[in-house]
Structures are given as structure tokens and as C-alpha cells.
Image (cartoon, rainbow, N blue to C red; front, side):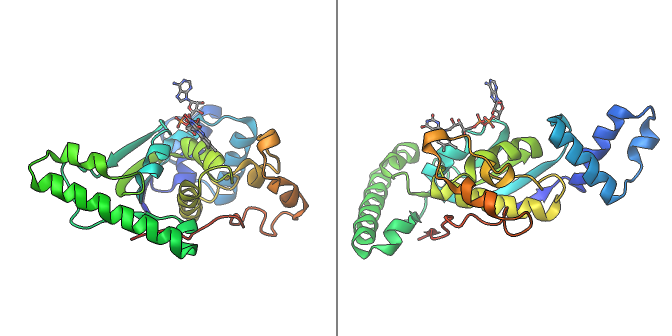
Amino acid sequence: MLLTWTPEPDLTVARAARLCYSPGGEAQVAEGMAQDEVCRLVARLWEAGHLSPFEHASFQFYVEGSRAMLAQLTRHRIASYSVQSLRYVTPDRPCYVLPPAFRKDPALREIYRSEMARAFGVYRRLLDEGAPPEDARMVLGQGVATRLVATFNARSLHNFFRLRCCRRAQWEIRRIAYDMLREVKRVAPALFERAGSPCESEGRCPEGALSCGRYRHLRRVPAGRGRRGPDPGHSDGDRLE
Ligand SMILES: Cc1cc2nc3c(=O)[nH]c(=O)nc-3n(C[C@H](O)[C@H](O)[C@H](O)COP(=O)(O)OP(=O)(O)OC[C@H]3O[C@@H](n4cnc5c(N)ncnc54)[C@H](O)[C@@H]3O)c2cc1C
């Protein structure tokens, strides 16, 4: 969920870029710009690969998900993170992410659910026996739920969407990436017009033999007919239990 963002992010970036090309000072930088001029300038920056002005706009998100997702998200170094700590917060009930594959299959779901309950029971026992929370948490698996706040600038977000909206990314972080993309598009349509996986944004795939082949289908979809819409392979089946 998008919590807060730089006011007028499209204009903020366009303004900074305009200064590079104009002789004026403070008054000119502070001047407004028509939205079509903003869009033209942002598109020009994108085409030229002059992306440093995108760093002037920041976006802060609240994210919930598994510790497996946390490990992947925090690989994106050009962002700031604050994560709920199991050293200071001790959950009073099992709270974990249910993968879609387990949701669909009652037998797998039951194995997973009982294992989570068992691990959580051991966690509680360790705490009750006086174990430090930072050590007791070691028995909780990668599916255990976590909460965090993450702040990205627009340039880093583009890189994140490029990598994590791709079908090769794991389903949970892909779902989160699509949710984040939808929200930033709402407040910064010019900045994120071309955001997404390479097949969505460029109609090509850099994955070679590992490609899922989706780009071939998207190439056949005329622009404006859902080409940049949600990934049909995108699963939204997870939820916290
Ligand atoms: C499908 C998929 C599979 C993956 N599989 C694995 C895996 O098996 N094992 C694994 O370890 N990781 C894996 N990753 C993680 C991946 O390698 C990256 O660590 C992660 O996606 C973060 O990307 P990034 O470095 O571009 O992002 P950021 O850290 O946000 O960096 C953004 C950009 O800044 C620049 N940059 C940042 N730091 C430096 C630096 N120190 N030096 C130079 N330039 C820098 C780079 O241009 C970089 O692209 C996978 C990622 C994906 C999407």
C-alpha cells in the first residue's frame, strides 16, 4: 500500500530536468508546467536514458508478506527499509503466508498448516522457558509473516518493476510489485508510463532460453489493448493466515 509520496512527482522530475536545459534560476524552476509538457519531457528523459532526474521523486510503501519475500525485496539496495523486528515484537499466534499452490491443494495445505502450528508452538515454548526472542525466532520458517515500510525513488522503482514484474520472479514478490506499480501509476502516470517487465514495457525479453515466451503474445497485442495490463500469469492467491 502506498503510504506517502513526493507531491506532484511527475512535475518534480520534469522541473529538475528543465533546469538542466534552461538558463533561468529559482523563479523559472519553481514555475508550473502544463501536464502535456511534463509528459513530453519525462518521455524524452526516458528515451535518452537520462534517468537521474527520476531520483527526485520518492514513494513510501507499507508491505506485508513472508520472510522469503523480505529477503528478495531487500536485495534492492537503492531503497530504505524499516522492518518489524521479531526481537522486539513477539506474535501471539501463528501468522504466515499461504502460497497459492497450498491453497489449491487441501493435502499440501494441511501439511503446511500443521508444520506452522508446530513451529509456532516450539517458539512459544522457547520463550516461556526464558529464551531470548532473537534466538527463539530461529525456529520460525520463511513463510512467517512480516511487515515493513519501504521507500524507493522512481528510478530505483523502475529497476524493481523491470525485474520483479517478470514472470521469472517468484509469485509473492511479483504480486507485491504489481500492487506497487498500480499505485504509483495512479499518482505519477508520466513517470511510470513505461514501467513493468521488459515484455510489457519494451515488447522484448532479455531472458533468452529461460524466457516464458509472453513477449511473443504481447507483441501481437495492439498498443492500448491491455499490453501493459496485469500479467495473466499473475497470482493473487496468497494471504496471511
Ligand atoms: C528472477 C530473479 C531471480 C533471481 N535469482 C537470484 C539468485 O538465484 N541468487 C541471488 O543471489 N540473487 C538473485 N536475484 C536477485 C538479483 O540478482 C538482484 O540482487 C536483485 O534483483 C536486486 O537487483 P539490483 O541489484 O538491480 O537492485 P538495486 O540493488 O536496487 O540496484 C539498482 C541498480 O543500482 C546499481 N548498483 C547498485 N549497487 C551497486 C554496486 N554495488 N555496484 C555497482 N552498481 C550498483 C546497479 O545498476 C543496479 O541494477 C534474482 C532476481 C530476479 C528478478
